[in-house]
Each structure stands twice: as C-alpha cells, then as structure tokens.
Length: 434
Image (cartoon, helix red, strand yellow):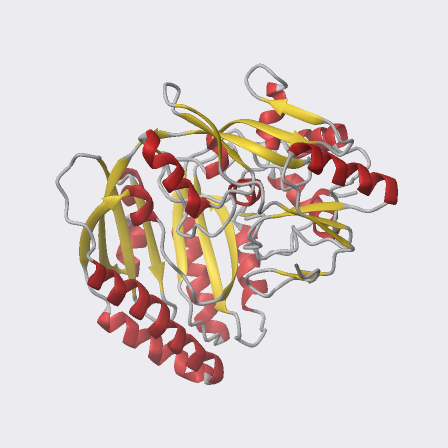
C-alpha cells in the first residue's frame, strides 16, 4: 500500500506518516488513541473522489476499504446499516435482495457512503434532499477514542451535525439509511434552448421528480434530463447494451475525452467543438431501475467547483456565467451542470433551510490554469451561494459562518466531539476555524 495519497482529480495530495487499514471498531479506536499519544492527526479516506484536500493528512490515514458491506437490515422499517467504507456502487447489490433502494443518488457512484454523506453529495429532485438527509443513525469514533451511537434515542441532538460532518467530528464507522421500495425511472433526454429552460426552470423542477440540464458554453442550447418515478412492476423499455455502449461509453467517454484533450491542446478550437456537439445532440427515452438511470459512468477526468444557491437565483446566475465566459474569452470544453434539491435541516448542508439550485462548473483536468473558477466563484458567492464541501472553492470560516445559520452550533458539536482537533487538517482549519 503506497503511503502517498492523491485524489481522483489530481488536484490534491499528501504524504501520511502512517496508514492504518482497520477491520473493526476496536482497531479504529486504537488508531485514534495512537494519534493522540504521538501528536498526530487522523483522517479516514474512502474513494478519494473529493476535489478538495478535505481528506489530506500528514498524520495517520485510515483506509476504510476493509470495513464495507451490510451490517444489519430492517425490512419493516426499510432501513439498512452499512459499514462506512461501502462504495455507492456496491449498495444496489446489497439492497436488491431486500426489495429496497436508496431514494436518490448523484450521477457518480464511485464514492464511499461516508465520503458522499460527509461532504454533502446530492442528486437532483425538488422533493429529495442530499444523501446525508437519509441517515437516521450513525456510529462514530470521537476524537477522544469513544465509540458513540447516535440515533433517535442516543444523542439525537448530534445527528444534524454528524450526518454531514466534513470528517471533523469523528471516524464514521456505520451509517443507517432510510430506504424506499425498489422503483423504476423513466428518463427523457432532449435538447432545448438555454433561454427557454432558464425562463421555465422553476416550473420544470417542480413538475418533474428529477430534472437537470447541461449547458455546453459557447452554444445556445442545453441537454435536459427528466426522470419520472414508476412502480417496479411497470412495463418498460430499458436502455439496450448497444445503445448504452454507443451513448455512454463511446460518446460520453471516448469521444468526449478526445474532444476535451484536443481542446486542452488547442483552446481556440473549443467553441467550434462545443457547437459540433450541440448539432449532434439527440433525443432518447428509456427506463430502468433507479440506480441504473441516475448514475452515469464518467471516465474523463476533470476538476469541479459546485455551489448551492437559492433556487430562484439559478436563471440569473447562469446568465451571468454565460456573460463571464463570453466577455473574458474563456474556452470551456466541459458543460455546466444544473440540478435542484429540497431544503433540509442538516447544520452544514448546502440546502440547509432553503430549496436549492446547484450549479457545477468543470474544467478538463489537463486544461491550463486560468481565472475561470475564481471569477465564476465570485458570481456564485455573490448570490448567497454555499460551496459543495467536496469540490473546489476558496471560502473561509468567516464567510461561511455568514452563509450558514447553524455554523456556530456545528462548531460547538466539534468542540464536544473533537476538543483536541485530532481530525483536523489545513482544509478544515480554513473552513471551520481552529
């Protein structure tokens, strides 16, 4: 096992002093106590799919890959408890025999369940919160080495912090998720005009179970995706193997990856490439089990920044981003992705207390550094935006405290569970303070 840690996007790296690969809660406790004795910090690592240094450490890195799978299931309550190192892509196989599914997913499933929930990963759908909102219980190892069970009867006041805790409150051993019966999704993908979609954005997200769109800069159109939930026994037409190979592998990965690479080498070609993509965009309709429709296999490496803004602000933010790209002459090959989610009660959720629109800007990982992210972030922040904790941003504790009504309540929980900052690192110091 190599000591050097590098995240998926190649944006962050660190060199931990020690790597621990525990198989039990007792071994996690031992790692935390060892850190306290030696003056090291501790950071658990899952799939390393965060774009920030939230998981970086020069102390003890805890590899959770040996703590995966189903712990217990209650089919009557439709709840399952999973080990923290379980990957999202593993969950459907675990739930299928139980007749259960997760209520919603993002469009990538490479993360672990704890990595996804601790950073606030979400999907789209105005009736659905982020994945962490489905956590009804958790077991953690605190900064003092205590194993703490948190649920409706044990320390329930801690759950709104621990469910989305940034890895700042403890090592999450297990999470208990509220699931739903397995269901189908009917997907309708279609091109549309950007101006029309922005003018009707609120109507579209309220009318659909799940709605999102992608806009390729330098074009006037978008690709929309509208998903409708259906009972599992509904007659349906799934996406065939050939269609999946052509659309998702050859088009979305091979061809798009080649176009992105060309754009990185010849930036001036990007607008023409994007307009070519716009011209070949087609419609398609299909249905399948929820996880097969929600999740996309993305193999083209990229960098990403995403902010959650008040839902009503989405059209204006998108117009300002378009003006920025045109006015500053940025050549942006990757699309901007727009989604929505329900308001929730979690202390540091980007959707805490408000219906939220999510706007994600991307760059191909080999693109030369420029000011695109910095200037886009200024627009997003100016509209009361909150940065996704696992994606690139420059916000600090002072500005974040103003954005989150329960910021100080979260810090108080941190003081209680990790008074000596065993789980700290430079990223957490920047966003939460000392």
